[in-house]
Length: 171
Length: 439
Image (cartoon, rainbow over all chains, first blue to last red):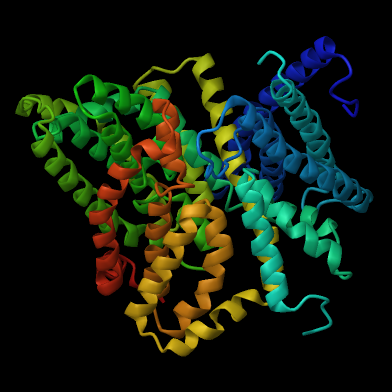
């Protein structure tokens, strides 16, 4: 995942698109699973069918954190993160230049997440959650993972836009 | 002042300046907010970049925000599960014989949808697909069709349930139940203003009108959509009666819509379900990721006491509640042009809250005025999310539909002014039904 995007177009592209498919699957699964702990929480309060588990709330929150992070990773690949559009209609090349600058911003933020995220994960290494005793690094590790993923996805887009900018064939 | 390297003014300049510059470079809002924190974190020795990870984590690790994906999922399940079709039929039976039929149906469907889903973006996405093409085929102007679809989608966050009210309640402790009730009348008034606008457009431009539905059709339509129309009562009622927390009520709505789609209307397959889950995940996390970086940004504002600095002048103006109400609405309308509603609440809502308190503006009225202003921000350029969605479905650029959108906003702004001038417009229902929640 840390390899530079330029390395091998064919294999690299297949890898990242496979990775994106995997993320999609995980994202849908996360959203689906999220329903369960909250439902359990409601059922346990109003019926005697199951004991009122105290970990449902925490499990829901942690799964939710991962949901957001995975979605944010995919959002970069699919350019879904919202932008403010104040530019007039640009030529394809100028557009590519603007996009490269924007992607460089994402790249910079990705580096912050990698750096701060590794620290963040190390910091949680020996700690567990309050209610369910889950190892906290399992959640904190989403930050460096997101950082690396953004580097891969945004890097790929920068390469594409570079091709357009330098007059190659538009993809 | 307390050993910080930067003064309040300097920090404000760096934060807002960097943010604006990054936005102009078309860096996505969520990333621009995070990056704008960076210079401060590098300059100030007591802060580190770890704070960005910690603050984003704290923002996402929230049971209240969990309601957001549930609301979106309910909306998505409704549109794939055949519920929307029934509601369209019902809307048609109700207002189909008025001038500009299809556009009136568009608004009324938004009202129904608003009672089921709490997300304007979900409403804009699904209704753009239903209406824009259909309206242009019937001879409506494209820019009118885009504009009415976008402006009617803002109802979703004004009429309960509402994602914005949940975020507001979580951040600026205000009763979510009271806000839900307080949003009903303003929401219906805004819908009324929109239907009036459609009427005037339709008469002037000669948009088509359908024949009146028979009484029998009307009864059928009501009967078929009755189960779907129960959803708002489950959500709002469940909260008011103390059965559910806000998040649980959103989850209950999901379960109810699954049950409806799978058992009553029987129009849901495995593939559609996967799509619904994935779309929900995409939309929810892109919207919520921004909450994290906005929280970090807001945290730094608070760290340097920038809100106090900004409001120091304002409090000397000697405003009464009405003037303060207009000032608050103005702030949110301007901010709403550049920011999404949830980060705007996080950053600006907390800034204005002391002002509202100091002039004795009722917290619930403050919330509703702010949320309605922010809802309008969803269709104001350059950053009007719902308008952007409608335009992208139609395949045109944002500015194409701006003129009609602005025309439609004028009557809506009058409703907002009424909300500010007469507190009882919003407070009437909660005072009547849940006076204890207003304390």
